[in-house]
Length: 154
Image (cartoon, rainbow, N blue to C red; front, top):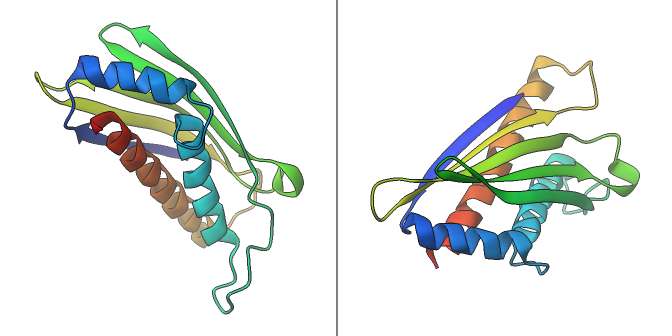
């Protein structure tokens, strides 16, 4: 399923572009990989938690995050992302392949757009399960975009 979300950030494009380069390269939890991992793990926790109890998730939420970029494309900067569950959950949970694109939005703002494709490894999902997966994918993307927007605006 395709997911697209965008935000307008209160940051001039040149400053946002420089900050994106910093957070894409950062190895700590404050970087783009850490933000991605946190957003994905939060979604997996919601997906796998038994709401009838306070028990921890039924499966591991270890996440493998891969990034490439940022790459200059015309007047934009793009980072490629891939998220997938690792360990025991590796073949059971959805993966995301996405492009995060920064573009100038006027003189003092930047548009951050994430276009992605969430793929479930399970072919025979019911409509309600597909709807839940889409809802979680949207929430994950939204969480990531807000984290990136905060980092670009700081």
